[in-house]
Image (cartoon, rainbow, N blue to C red; front, side):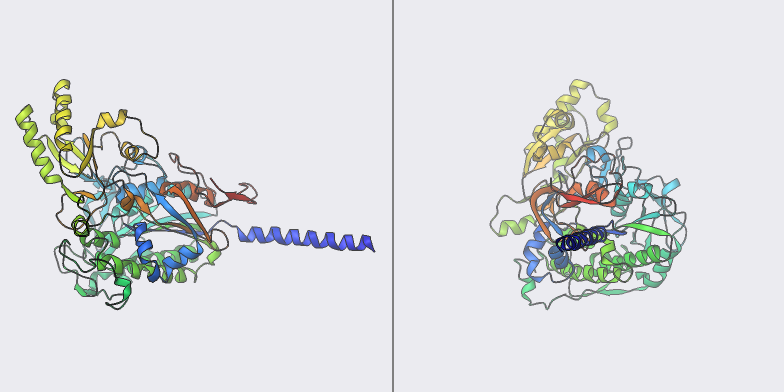
Length: 566
């Protein structure tokens, strides 16, 4: 009798073990679709302030996903180009080369965008007919990214597709890199487009979307407030103070679009632009997952409108606050639509941002913080050129100030004797350091030769230098001092909390969920972590550890080993 009981217990144990093993196999599986939603200028502070009124997609991800409460970018001058490229490559600008949205062409001295490319091979496609007379592509990105590794890891009979969709061209290109496909909104026509680098002509599925959903036929767009105007959801200081805004209020209004010199630029400032992008993303998923041989898909959804209104109206504005309420609902609706095509266990969602945003300095002054100010780049360049002319006899040497870097005319400066170059740099450094709001100034060589600990703010500046693309002088502002040429609105060009602290959430049902990580992590850890989850090689220049809280597995059997905690 005892032997029979032992046999029964043993059989039950084996059955339970088999059942547990099967459940693990089903429970932890590689996603078939990975959706990375990057909200441009989405500072983490928004979630702190607005959490009682976020009731849809953002709330769901905060409650159900792995939430990294303290995710930072190691960026001295956070902006779209370095942010999106860093998320994709898992490294900083000293490797990937995108030091800012713009930098000076060393041969011509002219300002160029980080996504500018050869017009002969990368001409931007006019969605209506022909091509434009400028090119866009990834030539300035110097290393591979997670997108490239994902596509390169395709196997025969198991194709992998990666798309990067955005309102801005540089967001799409910095995440598509070389191997993905970049698609962005064309302000002139109100349609989505790409360049010859990615497509010989716009693909049929995108042309179909443009015909069905293009805003080129619209003369106006409505921006209804998400909550009633007097709702407690808008109970923020100075929410209707437009004294320092760049434009008149637009939230809660019906706006004329498409009939101005700027084309559909005003449309890009509305929640409708985010909705259009989500519609395009859903169409892309449906097309590639259900109608083609694509087995796995990596989709970047780069949501730009919050950045547009944040710059113009500030993070305390009704425009910025209401944009996020709409976005909260739009994310939930988008996830529901994706569920029509795939099981939730097959989809990994990531929600993050490329950078944060600083408050409008004048409003900080009004609230009692006297040191907040604007650093007037136009005035700095004028006074610096006057100083160099009077003391050294060289006219108009300083040609521009981009982000926090001052560029000299390369052709003129290199012709000067070495001793004179050093004297000019030393004098210019001292002159700029006297400007209001400036904490420290380095020369390029000085910063390159100085050693800092990895987590020191000063090291952020060093890691955002790249030969031939960085300025002769590098400026570090004080906190809440906005380095910009604009007299209104705000920016995000400092290495401090408001500009570098962003949301970072991963969610895959029954796989990556329901955990809060309070340890400080770097946003650039996302790329190697995605490589781990997707079981592909990490980007070649990625220098960061995996995010804590992920699942470790045997790369051959796929068996779950343990939770990664670093």
